[in-house]
Every structure is written in structure tokens, then in C-alpha cells.
Image 1 (tube, rainbow over the protein chains, first blue to last red):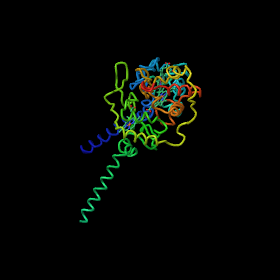
Image 2: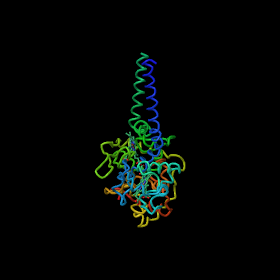
Image 3: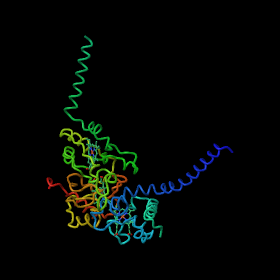
Image 4: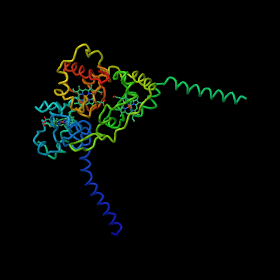
Length: 127
Length: 232
């Protein structure tokens, strides 16, 4: 085997290696792409561009929107409750009416995607 | 000789055409040439979220069932901001001390029209009725006075205040200011929008809430009487 061939082989192998590194990451991004867009359209107005509860409207409301980046606070809320609250609003879980109901706008699939996305951004697994 | 006649005729025709457009402003022509770049004047086929993110101004293809004409004529000559965070809030916010704030530097002043053009454009806008059945007419009972509870519904019980200001520097910023909604909007539009915002403006970031008929009447009545100082 001459040198140029082994360089080529090496280059090829590292390409494959790079490729295998890149794929899972972008697949994860793709998985949350739609949920992220939904969040930025509908949730960020109160929960914040940084998902920290400090949205544009947050200074004007009497109950602070949940900090979605807080692993402890979000980790304590069971999945069922997250889904219920997104669909039916805060009142459904004895929380504030200031958290609106979105079930009339989103499909069940979109609500599930949003719930999974919330777990992703709080880095607090699933309950 | 022939040539001179032809020239004279051409100049005359050109003169006629230009004097015509100058005297009676053509509202539709104004809309097409000065407004269509930012506003949908016909119902868009694309109702995706991407379109919502990209549009530069609110849709006007149903302006005739939305606005009160006197308000239009006035506003087009002297536009004041209605959406505190512009058209699409998410593109006009930045980090503040306590959280997201409006990034004023990204907001632009709305184009202004001279009086004759504003009147012509308002006429043309009032002729845009949108698709049949877009709003419910005749459901709202204007004769009934809203109950004293109506304001409470808005500010506390139904959470409208979280997104809408009613003036005085209070109330949320991601929705339109309703401070002068009574001057601006037709009551049937207010009623229909609260009942089903998504039917009128698909994808809009106002939730569709379950609201009883009685509360709908009260909220509509309350909003319809919110008027600017001159209107009071």
C-alpha cells in the first residue's frame, strides 16, 4: 500500500467517523425542531426567549410563569400534569388561569412533542 | 405633420391619465402599490407557522369586517402603535434587566397617507370582506350593558390582561393594545375573535379558550367601550 492510498483511506475513515458523530446530534435537533418553533411562537411570550420564565409579558402578570430551565421545579411536575396543563390550562392542575389552555390549537401529537421538549430543556428526564 | 399630431395626441393622453390619478385617488391602486408588500390583501393559501413568522404586517383581506372606517381614515394619516412589540413579537424582543423587553430599535414607523389617499385607501379596505362566514354577525347584543364584572373577567378571571394592555402602561405586550379597541374594531369582530381567534387569524398566539356565551357578551361589551380620550 502506498502512502497516498493510506492517506485517502484515513481521510475516508475519519469522514465516516465524523459523519457518525454528526448524525445523532442533528437527529436530536430535528426531533425538537417543530416543538421549538411552537415554543417560540406560543410560549416564549410569557415563559421567555431563554425559557427561564421571564418572558415579555411576565412583568405584567400576578403569577410568575414557570421557569422551564429549572431542573428541580420542572422535575417535580409529572408528565401527565405537564400534558394536562398544556392542553387544558393552569386551572386543570389547580394552577393559575394565567397559564392558558392550548388544546384547541395543538394536536395531541404536538402536545406530546412540547412535553418532551420541556423535558429536554430542563434536563430533568421524564417522570 | 402626421408626426406632430401623433405627438400631441400622446402627450394629451399622458396628461389625461396623470390628472385622473391625481384628482380621484384610486384606493385599490394605493393598496396594491404601497401596502401589498407587507399586508395580505387576499386570503393567503399558505397558513403555516413559517408564513406567520415571515409576514411583515397583519393581514388586511378581511379589513371590511374588522375596522370602523372613521378610525381607519384617521389612523392611516397618523398611525400610532397598536402592537407594542410590532408584527411578530418574537422578532422584536431583547434581554432586559428582569426579562425580555421590546427592542424598540427594531420597530419602524408605519407609512403615512395624505388625507385624500387615506380616505380612498379606507374605502378600498372596507370593501375587503374576507371569506363568507369568517365572523359571526348579529350574535353580540349591543343593547345589553356589560355587567360590572366584565372588567374583572378581562383583568383577572380569564387572563386576557396577560397579553393585552388597556392603556396606562399596564397589561401584557405580546398581543395588540386594546386601549382604543372600541374606536378601532367592529363589535361583531371583537366577539368572533374572542370566540375563535384561530378561525380569523390561523396560527396566531392567542389561545382559543372555552368561554360561555354570557362571558363572551360581557367581554365584547367591555372591550367595545374602550375608547381613546377623544372618543370618550
